[in-house]
Length: 152
Image (tube, rainbow, N blue to C red; front, side):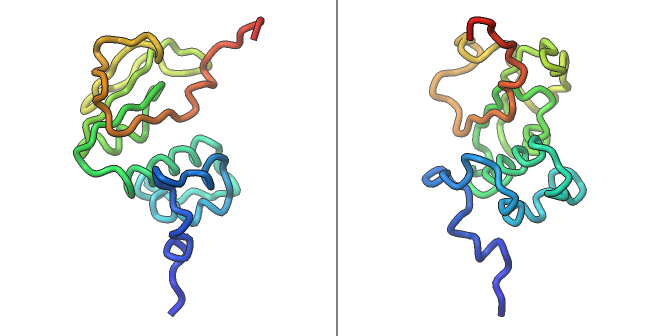
């Protein structure tokens, strides 16, 4: 019997102790995401026709599904209308840190049912974010919304 692709690549699965193979996107990673695309998006994602956000979503989604136990506290930095938090909000304690200013075509409002929204920037040390509280913190493409500094 031939093992399925996911089993044959199991030594390269994203986990907290060895994330090196996932520091940049690879088309081969989509074999690891098989089935997760339908679970998250309700349809299959074509690796040849998708954007970077879909890859990033699927990487974080698969990491949470395989490494972060239900009931854990997760924080999305700059999540906006987070597809990840929206999916996991019923089985995890979900938090979203986002100023929601619409920078770089980002959102100015989000539905926050099931998620705790803290309207602020990272680095402002907002007292609504408890210290040493979160089990998993992630960010997907939040830096694209930071304005460029001419002195930079």
